[in-house]
Length: 262
Image 1 (tube, helix red, strand yellow):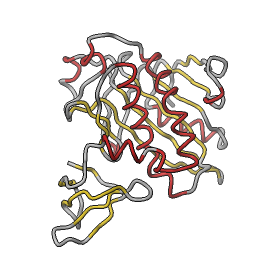
Image 2: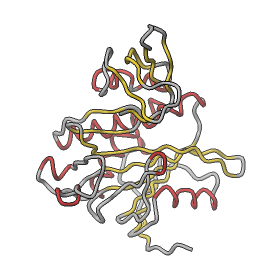
Image 3: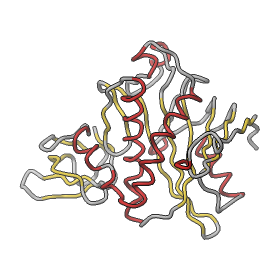
């Protein structure tokens, strides 16, 4: 079994009711915050509104099982356990909500101009500063969403050499150190008001953000990696639930719900 040291604190009394009694649990070391969230749900299938954060993450991963590198004590790795109390068609756009929250915090607090890349990355000048992973878990007839986020806070130039594709961090862009604890609190302030809107409106709650500051603007060529039937298309618009609507060479539309974009 995996052994770890845990420090727990709650922001319940520190924040306004916008946080809906969110419980933040900090761990000195974890295999991954996603896996710890799974363990929490195995023991408490109805658990929700819990944030699992780690100062050191040994086996962090992103989409398709790719390793997510975090510098111990410097970069923020956390997962949020959320209830599935929204229509099923809303769920695919949740990482797009988290991406906008990250973009907002980087702009408002750190004066960093970031771009959101469909469906789950945040970039600065083409370099990745944050990534998002969403998993829907079913335990004992209860469904929960685990929203995993990695944000490069204190990564240095030397740290970034270890990372592919090219990465950047708040420290590398501003020259000012900040704690991962502070960065998490800032993110939660940005995220939960957006999350509440999303619960009512779905993708429409962040549509304007993606249309104005998404990496792909109308007419851009979008290339799909590892797609068996479609290799590329011209971006036309976002669908009702955040899916990509692309145009083929012959003018016909096709829809992309999940893919890695080059």
